[in-house]
Image (cartoon, rainbow, N blue to C red; front, side, top):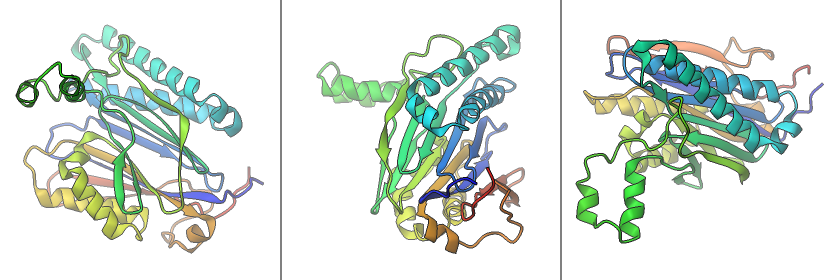
Length: 308
């Protein structure tokens, strides 16, 4: 029997197409019940049509497989977390390049990568691109990972006196990414191998940039209001707020909300009626008013001990 960890997680995933013609986000999570270890892998594809959605699927599949393979030995995983995460990213990058080189219609495809790994009260991650990783604690939201875009480089140039503010504000390529998994050398990798310590009540959100239509201030406001609710309710609230904006240019949006709880808190959480001790993810689809809009929520139960 596995030891039931003191720090447990409640997680909920959302993915929605928005107003785009294709879904180019991909997301998956794995939080095996009771062992205080879990991770999310998210990719935001680019390249259009058959390219972007395939790139994100390749990246998520490769990185998820690598982490899943090592998750059976958490001590070894944590001891080599930086090397394992970087190797997974480079392996995914190589697979994207191989697919692109063999498929002319996929030339130029690529994807961002965001993969947070939670181990008891410790948070590690790897990210490439601009998909945000948030930590909400004591009423304050902060972004943890780097932004690999021209905009972040412009800020550096202004701060260092190499570019004035007016030039920066009017720069035409502010949103262009400076690092992405595209099959070539990865210019920038944010790999956190020294953990951020987590506390009971923390909320971690891994997201594609589609969530940022709300703005960080609004996300923080919503989390202050909903932080006592379940992860599924928090995720649903964020999605409803995006829907209220009714942005005609709404990007694909995917994210995973993870609440850090004590075992006693999790035992009191309300489980869906169909939950069982052996189910890691329970999916339900909720149709929205807009044509083709599908929300997928995954409730992850941590309340019980399972056989190892």
